[in-house]
Amino acid sequence: MLNFTGCAVTSSGNMVGEAASLRYSTAEKTFRFMEVGTTFAGTDHTIEAPHGDMHVHGFTENFKASLASMDYSVLGQKGGLFLSLPVSIPMDVGIRPVFVQWLGPLYLGAGASFVGGFYPNRQDSDLEPEPDNSLGRFDFFILYNFGGGVMFDLGESITLGAYMNYERMAMNDGGSSEDDLIFVDILSFNEENMPAYAIRKNVTTLGVNIFVKLKSPVGFYAEYTPEDFLGNGGWQKYRFGVIALY
Image (cartoon, rainbow, N blue to C red; front, side, top):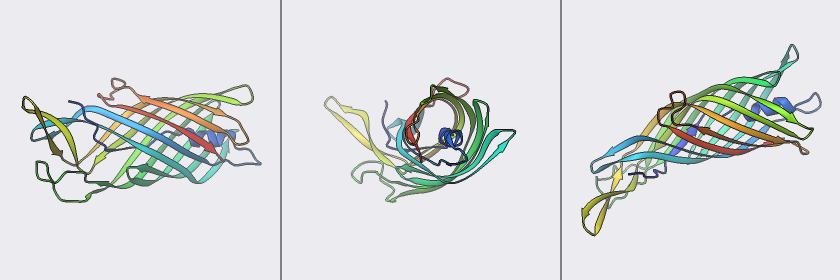
């Protein structure tokens, strides 16, 4: 049985926005970035309930904005320290320090996200097992990532890139009621309440990006976590978004 849990998927994310802001910044103009994206994730991992198990799937809308940065140059190669505000809906918010260093067309970096969130309980009082009567659950957790990528100019206006990221991902749910599809008799099915849970998983993600140099550069990215790639252990994640430099 495959159900959509409605749980929150929180990822430490990539470093494309930070790398691009360094790449496009000049002595006259220092760019910051803003990112809006969507994340889907899931696995064959199951949550147990009295009448059946449920596979874990979820999604979030993501927002991230640069709060502060400090740029430097080592032997002509740009580098920077960044502080950003990541927000995921449903609902958590954090603070994220990141380090990025360019080496020619290649960049390397690492980051951490210190995140707190509230995940509402959606259990149904008419269903079994008896709901726990809580409003939901609060959680605080630390996510991290490290990796790198490349960007190449195609003419004066377009930049293409690719990247690989090793990251820690969180799946949180405050409780839900889902179709259990347990056979009762020839004509009817039952539902049941599913418990709250918190899952953490390290995965390796591959991505591509493109930037178009308008008055201020605008970029798009898409990334995928293959379920059988480098120890991902059956977990998959799809994420895509838009990055605006300003």
